[in-house]
Image 1 (cartoon, rainbow, N blue to C red):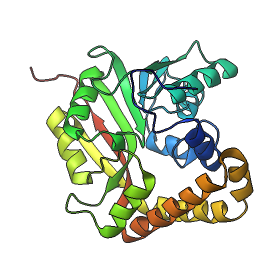
Image 2 (image 1 turned 120 degrees about the horizontal axis):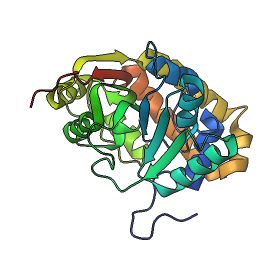
Image 3 (image 1 turned 180 degrees about the vertical axis):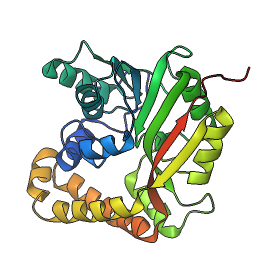
Length: 268
């Protein structure tokens, strides 16, 4: 499976997809599975809503939202071709193509009309967007008045210089990480117009989960992962998880839940 001819090489290619799904479950390219998705959406009634899942990956979360939370329609959006193709296959196989759709587009403004969505969800994907102010302005744009933004993302504790451990971790990941602090996220959301902005630090939760993931990669899950992606790829990711554990333990890496509302009446 090849990326679009005019686009860059995908960061989440078929090998990355296979590895992360071995670790996190079919259709999931971020940790926590459906339980963590449900925690991000806790207290929200999605019945009858039009929902957007930004950075949907291979579609597991999008399909879970459709099945469990029963919105009118949910659209998964991602910038990379391999993950969207996998997501479409999964939706067809699950018989959910009538209530779920997937859109792929190059990085930039969201390819959705103004005030066309009731809820925007994202799970650990906005880390790849460096310009937080621009992305939150765009999310605000596509929401209808009264709409909700509910997400999880990988943040860092502050916006000062990166520690040597964080530099090593980001280098080990080899991905386009634009990490920022909760304060930066809150400021960008409020500047866009969101009200009722809240953040919940999930560092303690993922600190323990990631430690378990590393132990499984070194032990009972290793052969399954090697069979899926090869010894060298598994060894590389064991090194990555080892580096990540250091910045989780220090608190510098802090996965965070985010929520905000677009007012019913938006000032012109």
